[in-house]
Image 1 (cartoon, rainbow, N blue to C red):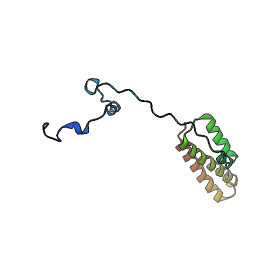
Image 2: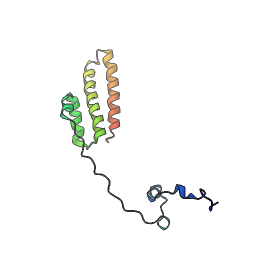
Image 3: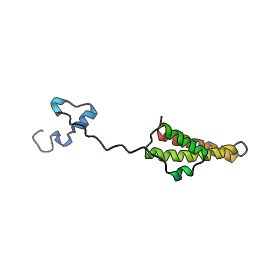
Image 4: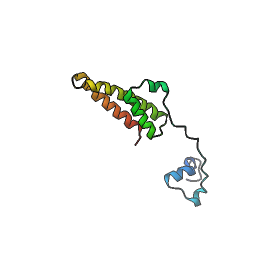
Length: 125
């Protein structure tokens, strides 16, 4: 019953933005679309700290430099890239011993999987 309190549909009224997002916006029913307000400025691209780069081996530095030359990364991607570079350094260390040591061979496989997962999480294509 429309005349009784709590029985009308005004309690769950959608905003104009929700109607636009859902595709249910109608100008004759919902009124004009409000102007878009600019959001906060983007952060500058992430750059590693010199101490972090100094701790990396040759393979990790090469990997990190190649990615940073090609892409602009944010802070989260940067942290993941640093971990991937450290993992790559470990992978190169174990890979040289993998032919003669079964433990090194298992660790090589594990480091390879970890490196691939980290690179996938960065989300750069």
